[in-house]
Length: 231
Image 1 (tube, one colour):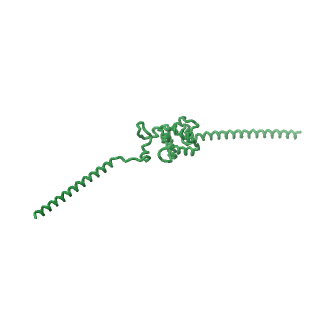
Image 2: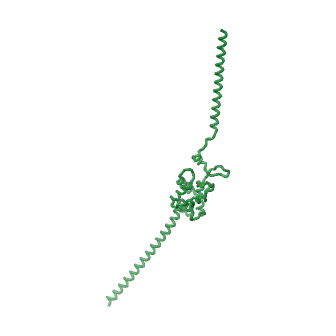
Image 3: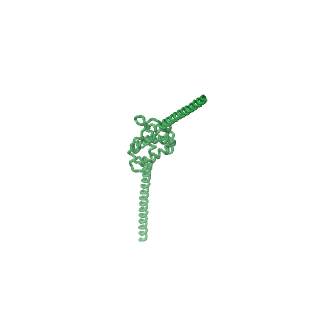
């Protein structure tokens, strides 16, 4: 009888010990999972390239090799906010990939749409002239450099960049005429209208001379008729 009681006591103690060990192991596993979750929460979430968040930071490299914010209004103070908006609208229009850059093929399409198609070498030279970071494509900042050079008269008249600035209908001149293209068209139209005006003046003067000559001839004929009757 005493042996049976002792065996039951031993089995009960073993069960209790097993339960304690199980609870302790469960607590340790829970702590490990909690620590792992805390580590995951502490790690920064990677930002995919080309995402809006990455584009918001900007792609212009800083001297230290990092990235910096680009403020067109602060860096390109020679242009008004309206001009900068027009330039940004034009840039976005031809940024077909929506990656914040105009590559060679997008520039090719742009020049064709503007009516000034370029050769492959011509397109490469256009990018090269303002490609400060040497990535063979145009960022928005480099795109603005085209208009800065155009406004300063630093572009060759027969260059592709000059054609881009001239045909883009963005006012970069100091003439007060809306749009570079409009400026050249206005000058051509002024010459045409001036020539037409001069022609009209000449025609009017010629008409007056003809009428005066006819009047003179009629007076002479009338005098001759009077003389004939007088005789």
